[in-house]
Image (cartoon, rainbow, N blue to C red):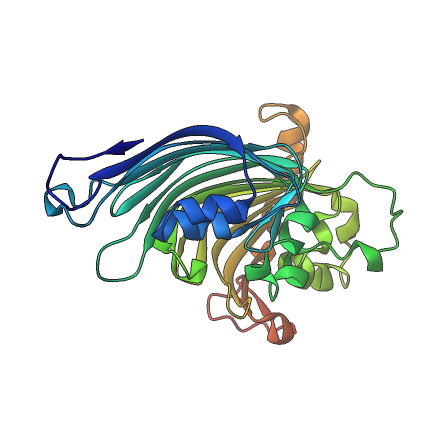
Amino acid sequence: AFSSRMGDGKGPISLRIDMTAKLTLEDAAKIFKGNVAQIIADFQTEDLPITRFEGAIFNSQYPEYADQTYFDLTAKLGSPLTFKGVPLDYLSFDLYGRSTLTQLRQVELGYADGQGLAQIDIHTPKSGASTLNYQFTLQDAEQNQAIQSLPQLDNLETKLQSTSSNSSQPSAREPARIDLQLNGQGPAEDPLRHAGLGQIEIRNEQLGTIQLLGPLSKILQNTQFNFTSFNLNLLRGNFHYQNQLVTFDPLRIDGTRTQITALGSLNLSNQALNMRLKLSLFGNFGKPDSNIKKISELITKPLTNLLEFELTGTPDQQKIRSLYDPRNLIPLFE
């Protein structure tokens, strides 16, 4: 529908849209301009999403209506698609486009066999680069698939995956699952320059093979402790991130009997670790007030300092040092 003034010769004041249709993404992008059109163009799908448009496009000949153009869009697609090359199982969202702000609300998506929820604000100033504010939650996704499907983490993929293919353990295991929460902000075009907070949980029967624990495994192979018998199966922790540095405070790795606490950081650019690890061999053995727990603490108490380590360096040049000697006189393990 058109709105106009009689006799001013400038044409319609605005074009108003209110429609529900199945449109190709290319056709949908043509209806919009700027930031909204770019968001739509970043999607790829073979199917036609069900889309509802409502909005008004104001004529630039009427400066008194400047910045009043708006778009509201609701879209739902129950079949696979991609967004900037990232595969999704399904997607639905509400989008509200204004002059310098685009808001995505009620975002629901399927990713790596998990379920995601999000809300995003895209700030587009008249001068300067676009920025994002976002909240994102992913639940029960398959760990390796989640990492493999993110182009931004290609150089990190092999470091975070379990190396179960090199393990002597049977391969018929439940796949590792991951939960993730993010609350952050940063440039729209550079995810490695963001800052924010998050939580992570990984449920994986082969946690003892991931890169973070590799040096510990190497040390303990030369002791009476069998690292693979610890049955580490749960990793969880809080973290904050600034640009390419992720800092854990703390990261906990648990097994049936064993508990590992890690404080420190991971650099996403080169996977360098700078962490302090504390290994409690029987930290999860028995109830807190049980006699078994008290006996295990008595047995392992002399080992407490011996099982604290400093882990630094990249995967190719990783070093781990015992913190037992305050002057760090114990040689480096590489």
